[in-house]
Length: 243
Ligand code: F6R
Picture (tube, rainbow, N blue to C red):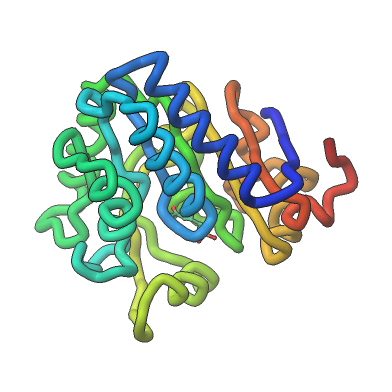
């Protein structure tokens, strides 16, 4: 695991956007798994701008979901589906090779198997970019999850239900999520974990300097063979060791 502390959110986002571009430049048929949420928003707008300016061919790139709120329609601005469409797919004109979770699947076990099989048949994930939940979750891999899981349905913990309200325009009942598992995270050929802002400083400290444990799933990034943790000064402010 390699930690980089950036002087600003802008610089962090610029770097992360460049990493996505490089992945595609070195492999036109790259498989990308890109988180939703506030943290990567600027990364994606910078990526969109660069990809357009440099006329990057995205026609062979595959996008796989990281997670989705069960029971939230894709038309809801708080859904992961809606976020990816607004921030990536629409601005880039991408309409194919998109593999997202169905938040209303008739059979979630089958939906998870389908996603596992999609990722397997594509040869695995080349770049998995994730955020850091306030409770240390990765995707919807909540505290106490198992490292051995692939896609699965997860009961959301109280922090996630509460913090998740920020994505919705009105109070929304959030009970379960469907998510890729930590095995997907470990098997991704390159993982990027990013976070910014003072509010993430305490969980960053626990994740990077506390015990490595599934109680703080993001702490497991320290066991990933090729992971970069990108944070800004504010998020790094409680760390004893900064670079
Ligand atoms: C989103 C996701 C979540 C977020 C995390 C941080 O697809 O999987 O794990 O990455 O909750 O969210 P933000 O970036 O909004 O602070």
